[in-house]
Image (tube, rainbow, N blue to C red; front, side, top):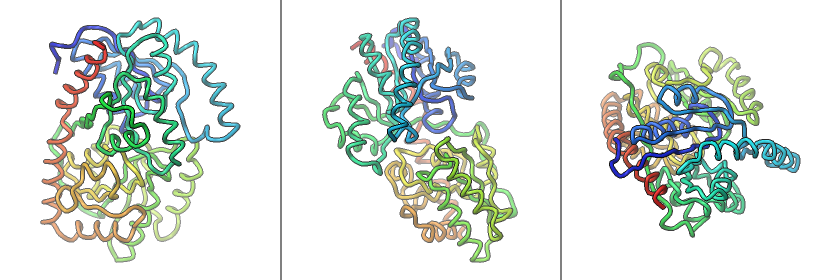
Length: 382
């Protein structure tokens, strides 16, 4: 909703990629909110992708500028040299984009673009950094180093309580500059259809990466097949360049006799609603999530969820009420939870109703828009 307190002006958004995964789609909600409040929005993405066309359709100016983001692929001596080279090449383009836009606020999407925060502050432009990460598996010195550039930000937006806790741990000086704004997640345009007849389909949505752990979903599938169940699995997601070997391992395993013909690699799917309409249960086996939009989307689509009991999942899933939980890397428990859903229609109905109620209450797009409008307007005034 447009805010009467929001001045008209320009917001320059820097985002690492133009994919349409969780943080990308949340950025689209942010851009829509700012446009509705009367801001001119210019988006600079590190690479080209489908998100840019969506943002242009919404009314933003969006370009693929070409600049690096912090990735694990840079985590080596050779990688650091490549990062320095890439930054040196991108710096003139980023500087020119900033000077051309003359923004009132720069919004930096995710922790992976600290150079944009530094560049904006060097030009005395207020910076809002929207943090979607709550990674706790990396060594603490690395996590501290990643969070340190946030000291330059005017405001730091955290997408979940888990992210707030992680940032407070690694950079306690953020203090009052940190704001909790839960994601706003839109549901499907039409009412969810009942699951189809036939084989029970499990769905995993997310990057094909060890952190997202779709290999655990394969473990779950094997256990359910061993129980004599007619089940299959759909994986909706693609791999980054540093995870192509992992994807190859998944595909090789899926081709073995027990799983052959039961695992479907759909690649990146957007919008996700058709895949959810084919599914009976959403699996979220991730080893870490700051929030996990896929869980919320499944709840809005009327599909029961079995998720790992990690950080952000604990904000969208109350065990036994809005979904079922299992420990990380525990395929046996996760398979047992799926079995409970498949065998108990009454439990499924309760989880579907509870999930939809929690998603619509906690993750309303309207509430999100109003809060982000206020964040950006406050940063501009400061």
